[in-house]
Image: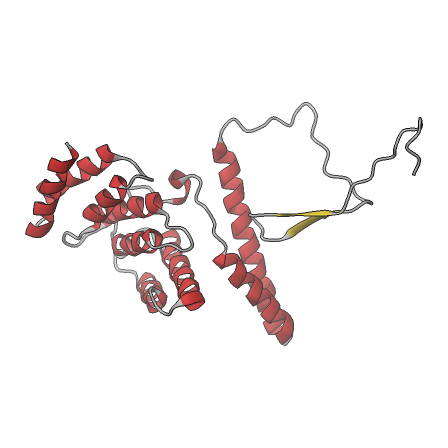
Length: 251
């Protein structure tokens, strides 16, 4: 290629970029050009809400499509390809997926645990079979399985009398999440457990308050508000004494 007066023709070099939402690869070759930027009407979103909702929908569609593909191969007797789809699903679930807007992904505090729903009970029992079981990669896979089943319960049966306990278990999962704990997510689910629970007091407020005290969460006022709620709502003397002590230290 001449580097003289004639203009140098430009070619796109082969490269690949990971699509976080889809877990696949986008490849541009010399025969392709990247998508053109829309002119005029293509306004950038003024908020991240639209983008996060789009990301969540893309993730869900990707997972659903892989599940359908695996089932198709199972139905047609293609064992090898069904294993490919299953392996890709495992890798997708192991991937760290951040929750950029908790107000989008966590159900509202006004849900009401109204009735006993056998199907929801089945999901809860199935999730508990996996939660905290195994070690290493098996532990990670089982935590993801439990998370998916608990989330499915909240999505499908928001009036189940198990939603408060489900929120508590999700809070516990997110507090110990691997590879990176999701502390704010955990604290919010512990709060939801209190808001949705129809049974007696638990340590959910205490666990949420302690998370809000953490440096990387940093919401001391929220922690103090929860400790004050423990003083007026809890029935466990040990938690009440601890909450009073923590309030003194946070002054």
